[in-house]
Length: 406
Image (cartoon, rainbow, N blue to C red):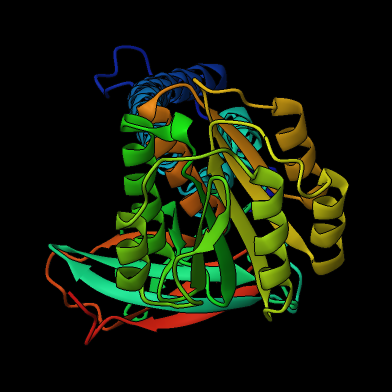
């Protein structure tokens, strides 16, 4: 029977025993070793984390630099593109609708990219304002002609009453192709001979007109008639001591030219009688009436009071246009009064060159203003274009380019 726990006793080891002795560590030393091991592991982990952090920080700096470089390149490219848009607007300034489109594109781009929008806004402010055109105005096409590598498009803008509108500028025009092809064009003013005018042409053949004055006046008048006929009708009168009708009413410039060749200088100056005779003849004509008189002197016969001529012209809406040639005895006050009260014009020619110039100015004055669009078409491949006037466009006209005259 085993002994009970209460009867056990610890037997002391005999002296001189050779049995090995085991050293046992105390618990505090074990804890110390565990702590040291944990500290070592923590130091290693800290080093690994620190090195990883350093690598991450370096990578972050590198990425930030790359992003900054990319932003700088993007901003530089944006500025370059913005400058190109602004330059396009300046290049197209003569054609304001195109310039306005470029500046608007630049303004929108600058706003999206965070750039300064002031240059684009300033470009828009510097453009001329588009003209407001009445809704019921009309565009009339006169002619389309192929000239070398360009098309000339002649058109007229008229009011509802048929009167030409001549105040438009290139800022009011926009020309677009049906195919969307970018177009290069310019717009300028031109004229076409009037239709339905009645022109009484009075040529002074008094003695003082002898020599170069009469010859130059005859040639200048011939040029005027050749440009205004056959769209209008003309009747030629000469006056000196008497008034002589040299042609019937005609739209044939050759007939008038033949009458001009018969002019000879001799006699006095029955200016008032000539004006009254031509005015009475004009008063019976339908349509617009113009009386053109070329003289170097004043009335010397007193056959008709000047007020009678003025009354005739006012009653029948006859405009008197006078060309006074210096070198004679001209009554400038009377001629100015005649032209002013009849709604005509007065020009003073100091020499023969002035005579030619003033007759040519009358051609321009009596002609109808039109607009000529010079459209570059080197290949001639554009079938048609659309012309728009006003902004927003209130008038529109499609113009075929095939089959145009040369």
